[in-house]
Length: 308
Image 1 (cartoon, rainbow, N blue to C red):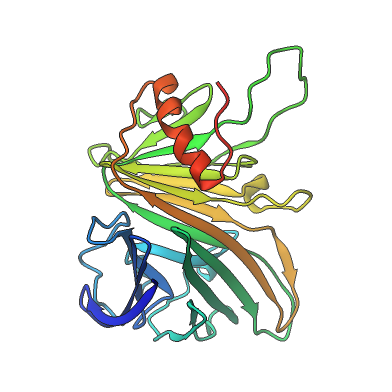
Image 2: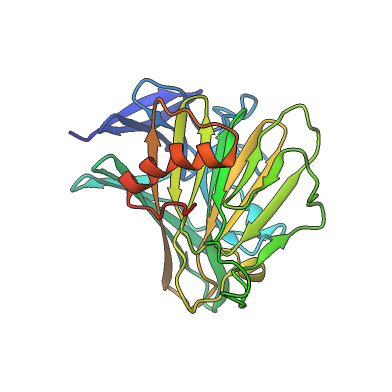
């Protein structure tokens, strides 16, 4: 049974707790839209919470707060960093929670997120609506800010030996501050791994075109899976990225992006994610045993497994 109840949380008086199938989410209504908490019922929060920002409802600078948020890409300052301190409207119908942000005065873009829990899966529909009298080019961008101490897992594309396949597999996109020798990263044969390490005081980011359609974050013994769609034939931002990953001391972001669209006035573009949280999962560091431990959970979620 899925339940929705109003609660205070983290210093905010108005939040919603959506729970069911052993899953728990907390959504802020005083700011956002944001999912500030996600995990198993009564378990740890897999999302980062910035303690010095919790409960804040005003300010002159953009705040992350943590949790999961909706942005629009490409990343440009100040457009991307529009403030979101306004209260969020919500409706609850047929077990679907709909969150509606007031139109951003800086951009003329309105954000909506619809959330439901079905068969132990969280379904999220992100929506950007152009309220300007002119067309705007953008892409929806879902950012999950994961708590410190975990490990990101991203599948490589299927391996084929030379000369069986001679065409390239996909683009890997780097930023000016990306370090290929960063000790937090392992560029494996079947998986890319990146650790959140609060002792390393630098930033790291990479993006790619991920046709496998998923990424994972392992924190303690909890496994977070995110389905990341890739729509064939569409143009994606940042040199073709449908997913990007960023870390600095204290958190790691698992980000998904929708296609670039020229959004006409009063029209919308949507971007869908699915989430799973699986408790009591042990994952080794070595790639072979790691894949053997991970594949059953990918199969249960209906995601592509990793071929060995």
